[in-house]
Length: 436
Image 1: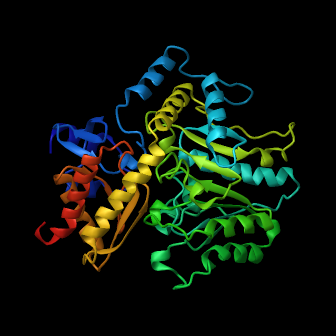
Image 2: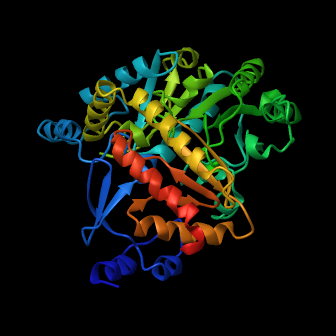
Image 3: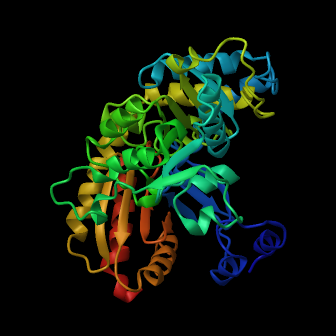
């Protein structure tokens, strides 16, 4: 182990894993530079970034147009409040741009430092909205098993894995969960789907009483359930149930937003307009930390102008981060990254399916745009995941295998020839598995 890795294991606290696991795998892998769709470690070894960092760098690494926008902002103002009666010009411009881009338009936005904070603000606003409108018992948040919404206490608590949500002790009250629309392993074994997973929401509302339910929150497509793509009418049923019982619909686009699925926002595939949309990751493509909560003006019109909304976060509307987002969104639009994601994703999905059909280690291959998953199967799927991770890294592909899911989500700017090379390496990991 070299000196830099020794320092990493001495001074860095690794969450989401164990120190023993990091050291036993001769880690951590330390990246020191990046360009386009490539990462480079401290020894200069090149890796194809097959996960955009962590579903973040949608526009690719080292894009000078985005960097220039950030550098110019440093010359103007690096920090000012954008809350409690203060604002800065970049936060205003970005909020206006998001209102133009988001489904349904006509939105007001509060900015945070990342997705977890944005989820917290969205849930807080949902409860406050009902209280202001005289529905003081509407406190319960309904989420889904198999979802993930962030690392803060409430966001962890509404996430759908007990190992995660209960890891910090007793979870806050006022949380209910329903089944995930995981068609590959449908809880109801539905061949002729009647969307029972969606109607569970109505069952929970009736069981607790409509007067008690504040909001339903979910990702349009959940990466943490292995890119579980719901049936086409799932979200329309959810929207109708929310409308029927005056429950706010919160859509978590932290991972799926900003062209990742072949549209600017994944919920657009389902022709549904949420009340609140949560965003982060691809909003700046990782060039600066930023999250956002956009609320329909139809909702805000029911909050009187003299209402006090409790304070948010110090770095809300940070000018540098907002400048990064504006430059990033301009880059995405100019380069048609929504269409590029759809085209490249269709190619990659076809390559994987054609080459790995009936592979003994694979349960399913699914995806939409450049958001793709290979689901492992068998009694040794977690052992297989560790071996595959090392194979991919040794062959110059960085990605993550979480539980039984091999995630593939490269930058949307990845050149066609590199996309093909990446596919060949991933396919080789499965076809040559017995030789690893």
